[in-house]
Length: 101
Image 1 (cartoon, rainbow, N blue to C red):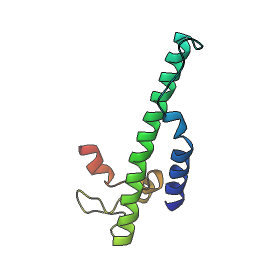
Image 2 (tube, rainbow, N blue to C red):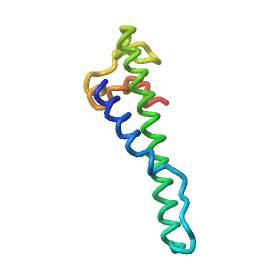
Image 3 (spheres, helix red, strand yellow):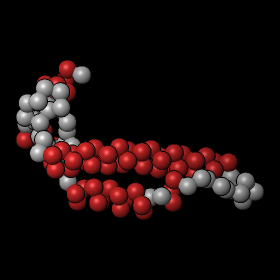
């Protein structure tokens, strides 16, 4: 889990440039190129938001590990299946509670 956290932070650092404001000279770059650049920027920003959300989920999972509550469903208190935690180590709900939401 800590390796995943580190990898996501590294990726976020490397992609910071692609989220920067698009400032193209209209004289030298055509309208379609500018639209493409803006679309690429929007996609990079969305990916960054997803990474930030995932980092928060990982941080919460690490805190639950430290507290000794990792693997417990936050809704019902039952144990989260190992297969579910293998698929999503930051899962907070058992399958039954996740389905009911």
